[in-house]
Image (tube, rainbow, N blue to C red; front, top):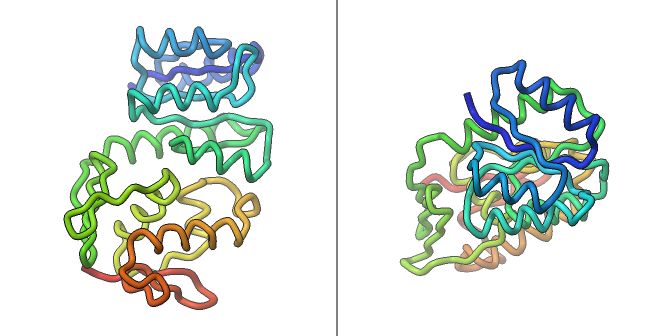
Length: 224
């Protein structure tokens, strides 16, 4: 069973989650803050990290940034904040999921399973027109040249290229990328990221051929 690193400064929450996850068969190590958490991460590389945003000796964003500099280990943020900007900031740093407190332990366990399944899935190259996406390297190439995407832009593109020809609704984007209630992701936020992504991958962003808008319904990626 997978090993979990829980970085949480609330002793009661840490104990409750640790006991529950152990009952589910996970090996769990806990740390109350940034310094101890990063030390455990280096000593005992986990399969998944549960990371509180607010820590006594720092914050989860700093921890996530330090981890992403050296590893693609899945990170799930735990937070009492439902602020959209806070959510977006976490995903920009490369978080894999975001769950707001209070939450049900069974829901968290399901999120962990989903993240681990996605992380361990055998990657394959994805193609669409002159784009190639390599999930194993998080690398996007356009006509042989690397395209530099933010974490959210990359996740959007991966979702579309993994489902060529399928209608992807805004609700599904919220469920699969942010995996939280759609109310935390406003239409304006999605519009901004779609525009940024198209500016980078489309030959003519005003007349997109890779990701097309289906008015009133969502988006659809072209079939390669």
